[in-house]
Amino acid sequence: MSQATNQSWGGRFSEPTDAFVARFTASVNFDQRLAPQDIQGSIAHATMLARVGVLTDDERDAIINGLKEIQGEIERGEFNWSVPLEDVHMNIEARLTEKIGITGKKLHTGRSRNDQVATDIRLFLRDEIDVIEVELKRLREGMIELADREAETIMPGFTHLQTAQPVTFGHHILAWQEMLARDHERLLDCRKRVNVLPLGAAALAGTTYPIDRHVTAELLGFDRPTENSLDAVSDRDFAIEFTSFASILLMHLSRMSEELVLWTSAQFDFIDLPDRFCTGSSIMPQKKNPDVPELVRGKTGRVYGHLMSLLTLMKSQPLAYNKDNQEDKEPLFDAVDTVRDCLKAFADMVPAIEPKKASMYEAARRGFSTATDLADYLVRKGVAFRDAHEIVGQSVAYGLKTEKDLSEMSLDELKQFSATIDQDVFEVLTLEGSVAARNHIGGTAPNQVRAAAQRAREALNVLKAGA
Image (cartoon, rainbow, N blue to C red; front, side, top):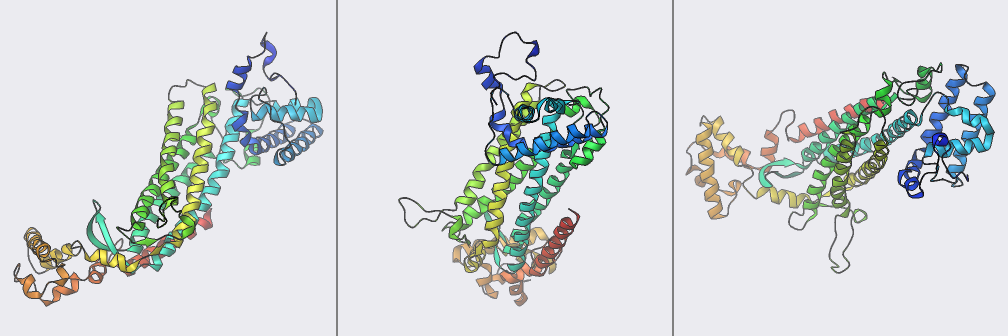
């Protein structure tokens, strides 16, 4: 393609665009990524135009065959992208006209680049959401299986990063899974609003040609056409909503990453990550660095930035389309790529986590993690909770002086704080007794963890069946 200017709009201009301005305003260097969707949309548009009599069947076939040939050129890396032609749409249309002649110029009948690009982005994002959902399901499945497998593995539960109460590792992993379940709902809900067809809105007011937007929507798999042409070409809510989903998801993955980084440290020593998810140090040969979770934690910030970019991009735009909207693609593309890659990394890594059960158990024994169990024991014996709280506080102070955990104290030692305490207290002061006592839906008792894992598995299977 040797065109020096963009012939789609140059008729009213008396001088060519400045070379720098042409480069500055062009988007083809990044929006060529939309070529598959642009061709898909154009094939549907040509098909619809033939059905309503705007194109003949021969013209339709020539256009469709030409577009498929161009798609082959792009896939083989043979397509010559031209900056003067500005964007993916005009590059493809110009090449189509080269291949099939004047019929190629008829493809743009009844549409504008405004509704064309809005359609391309929605098709692109819909495709990417479906890929992302596969990785999200895979990660959730891995978490559920890990939680089920480790339903009895005891570890300390934390508040303020201080030992609070014993929980099971399976219970903790299911907390992660709950975060992702909400993210999954947000993603599917977002897809509903992505899957609406803007094509046919033309530049901003619709078109005078007898188009049938319902036909185009059906051909492209959209649920329905948009209701208002002004909104259709200028709306980018769907991109903002996806990037909002991405930000919340990455926030969750970042929280998980922080815990993984802590747990792999020598100070915690709770888990081991396989070598394939870690790297070493160029100077310290003993190091095994958890680079995958660290990088996911770091990438969260760039996705937050993309959300703010899109919100700021749209905040002052009057109706309808403005050139500002060209800046929507790079943040959206990078957010999509980042989310997909982070989910893939986690889906590969999480099932391979190896808990160090002895280290977890020993950590749960430190920090008087069964103190609340002792208070609850006293309450069941008739002691008011505030009095029980004071009694346990005194016993903890004694334990700090003697360097004894509550479970390590003798009955006589415990009785000095309350005569109500009896031999059966040791049933609740063990870590196993503590976790087993939380035997209700949402609790950390091993049988509840297994039941919760099964419910999560069934919910995910239903979701997969309905997808």
